[in-house]
Image 1 (tube, rainbow, N blue to C red):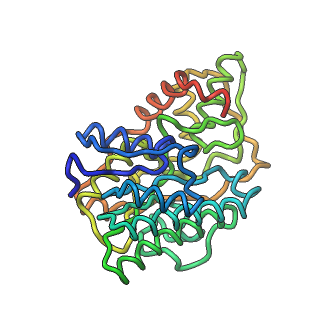
Image 2: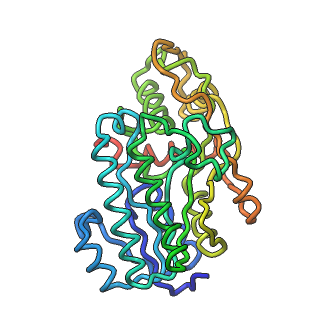
Length: 314
């Protein structure tokens, strides 16, 4: 268990997940949180990471730093995604181990699971068949980080754990017109359509794929909960256990944003994977459940979008 005065390092504190973990730690009264911007500490540089850990000696580490992007970004920069994520996580996990870190929590992604995984996806299906090609590079890097934590536990008796979130959304999301994920992209598109008085918005595919969404502050709550309540080599899925179609999602976002025009579907565009639902029974058995329902979460995310000075540049 972390003490309120424990020295806690959150890697990636400016990202959506890292910033939510910092908010959650502060909300729960933890007051010795260390952060570094990318300019202060480049996690892909081993010497810098080793010097930082040797000097600061954090007791607990949340590893939420990563190079991330949507399908387009992943496909166009496969080598970059693999190299940067692999180097970054290996540097941090290794330096934490060398400097006697009590516990580390590694943040992965549900894309680590096989393309044709059973639905809902249990933690045990990892590495049972091939990955989705469009984000294979990112998935391989994340699997390596997860496995390195497991192997350190086995070889050296460390207490390093990992958590695998479903699709996330919320404050500090990326609303870039082409490089963002589906929910923030829809928020931006419907907002701009409303502002411009557009009669209709056209979405990709036919709206049939099923997706699950977790509000990022709920994930952060689980991350702190797991740091205090879970030890083990197997990862823990983070999700709601609920899914809806992309069509239902677009209608919900349009409703929240206040776009009253027509929603059209371009069926010449790909749908993506038909279904991606996590089995969340493991987190439930540990005593955790999400709090934020999707419509409320989208309202909070839209409010963040409207007041986010970065959204125009992203």
